[in-house]
Image (cartoon, rainbow, N blue to C red; front, side):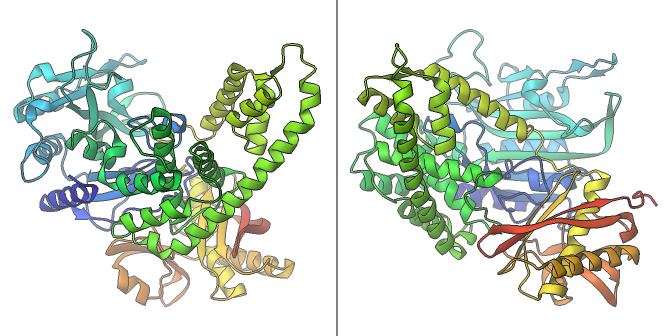
Length: 611
């Protein structure tokens, strides 16, 4: 089973069950300040799981590219990846547990699809719990009974607590519910009497997760049944392909083979001969793939000191460091990137469209990192006289971490240079500083998987509509060169990136701001209609360049139907009329990257959304 075959079989199966295939979305979440990247297949569907109507209907299926870096230090083992693909199918009030479990079992066991022997499958379901207010969420006997009807015996159905089998809500309140997780038993002996799905010994491998959103958590902490119940499922492509083929590592699947072969050739090493070299090859293969997909995205970020750009920079530089460990000198990532684009271009055509940009940015970052290493070496030599005064000849962990964090200086090189000067490094102190830094980073993007949601509060809804006004105003003042390149909204401010070749003048900034405020004062109506994509474009609706849209899309119009100010293809949410937005103020206009400008703006006041 190849990656392509799994994707094709999954989509074909759910289309046969009345699902509409929709397009996967960008790796860079639009208007979602809670995460830097799309971290799960469900993330772009969240507004629809929360109640919005999807233009393609109430049964959907797709494949989605995702990036998670919380476990980046584990990459290189048998199962961890920073980039991965998720397959998903969704019911937006159409069907629930009965069909969801039946179809999961059918797809997994039917020889026409995956053909997994049923005796290899184990499942977990929610065990139930008592709430703080004395009410009780019952154990999910409905899901367990359905699994039994499918032929899974009771001794392979495990009731587990909230931490294992519950999803949501995304924030303090909202839709949530139990899930059922499906595990493949690879046949190895149990590690002990308590070994079960969820154990980390490797016997049970999770391949699918079905979330049943059937409750609404209220502000008081109680759980009320939802009138519109939804199903959200996710299957990891790489993990499932490795399981189906009886492989010990996700890096053995077909998609990784040409990438690994390329790295072997560059390093003059053979994969499978040395554990340390193998781990380095796997890290480079993963990181090269992740960097290629981030740079090849229609809303690509570039390496930077903060945000998603910082994560990208770290991934590229980590790949380069491990390349040096293998003896690869000079810039080299363009070669595996070329292989990756070739392997994935049919499923993700945007990679081919942005191939030149990918190659350019990788080369630039590798060049920058070379200069950084030189700066780090110079800093080390500057610190050396004081460091050698330490009678124990130990370089403190905080110094080693500063070299790593500020200068991108690999700890291994610090150790080598210390040894050359008769010194050692306080590795435990370094790890402590690194852990502290990681915890800070995780705090910044807390809730990445369980949440993955933007704040759909009243103020962010106002900001979202304001981005439409801003784009239309920018086009009026600066011309047709302007195209949205991304946006980010928090309850405190909005950030809008757009293509333009120079800095805006003070007069242009003032003019744009005035136009936006003029449309707000006019109190224009904001209306939505669902149209075929081509009809929407022909009507004058602006669509995000490079974005993947469904055949049916939502079009938001600001102004009268025959004299509109703004018309865009968009998923929402939006105000009902522009006076609800309030006063608009541009705080800053600056460069974001080559040919891309960035505006930061705030709004204040405005009418409540129900007025």
